Image (tube, rainbow, N blue to C red):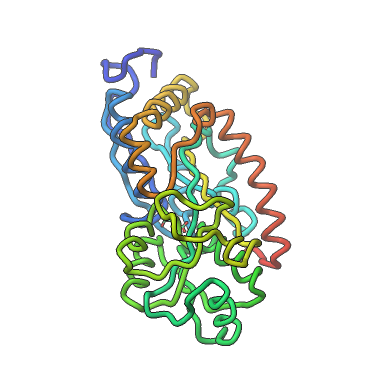
Length: 312
Ligand code: MLT
């Protein structure tokens, strides 16, 4: 790849479709954010972006596939906080977050919500804690596999509540939410980018949002601190990655396209409707993303070790 600017030109990047790999199910939160930014990024790059869902093992299957892809800028990974939790949870990951990828830029940081099937008995977060303590053997907690944001949030919930529950893994919280709405599982932690619609429509019961502040689009939902569980704090940062060795001018073009997409008012509005926002422009850069990843790898290694969870 040469340094031709103004994408789309023969010999310049991109001169064919770029694949954005989502390591979770279609229709879920990671997929939603990816598809949201793919269009304005493609426009900024002067090319086409195809979204591919490569599910499995809490996002590690898709991440591994991108780690092994040709480092030419045509395979891009959208991943979230799970990039920083997996090394502490998997003995044989097959990739190293800081060594296998080039960071492109941060995208968004999404609050989580604690939601249940709508006929689940507990009315408040405090009731939920009491209920799961009294019925630990029966209550089911959905997640998107080990290392997923929902798994992590569920872990924090169980630690804060002092219980161990029966976890039901899915390949993404898209299908998990479908089962929650259908009443097949009891509750889960999931991102507002997936749950906002069902919460507003009353299709699920919502207990709290896991951020220090309430979410503007869900103004009636208390924070976990307000609802009596201040230890349950997590938000799901997302970033774009390419395989290590990808030419720096390609990384720069992707990062600039990401910044353009995040500055698009349509994206700002779409994200706000789903309880989130683009990161500040300065964070949609390889440097800021790498610094965040480094910090988060350390943070989560400690949290996971303190929670007594062993890598499997
Ligand atoms: C998804 O897209 O399914 C999620 O981000 C899953 C999760 O990490 O909980």
